[in-house]
Image (cartoon, rainbow, N blue to C red):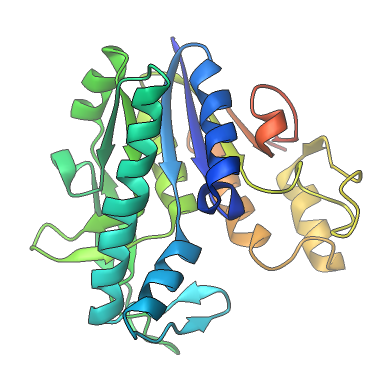
Length: 256
């Protein structure tokens, strides 16, 4: 099978002009077929503040009421997404910006209210990559924003790591998929304060042991949970790294 590289970029990398340009320069040089998935939470928070809309977070997850849904739709589906597409075009990459509503490629349901009402946050229920596959095969690079829909007309805010993992799973029957999570750190760290403590290879059981010890915590936990789920469902390889390690480097996740 032909190789497909899916890169998910988030955090400061996508928020700061210089780091985003550096990332896109590296991404443009990747050989073969590719897809880019982006976040943009800090930009959404900044835009909400400019509009006088309060941002509410619980355990690092955004509460998306109707006003915040309008903000994230504008920022993720518009400002951030189209800026990335424009810069890729400047780099000679023919890209197209999409949300889960486009081509109906990713459907979700509104997260059920349990202890917390997250509002218009979506949990993915189905992925349809047939049309996306045709674009990819024509060397078009889809740039996927973290928005989905419920097929009933409702947009939903959906975690970008989840978008990347679900897209990777969806493409895995057709391509040899490598999923790369690119953020500020050089990989999964044994010591969060020491960037030289990169764990080169990590199994699911190793991840759970480090989670129990407290070495892995906070936002890295859902990222790794999503990743190991994707490996179990057919994604060939997953790496977590920074811009410098995009082509080769960081932490490689492997099955037990």
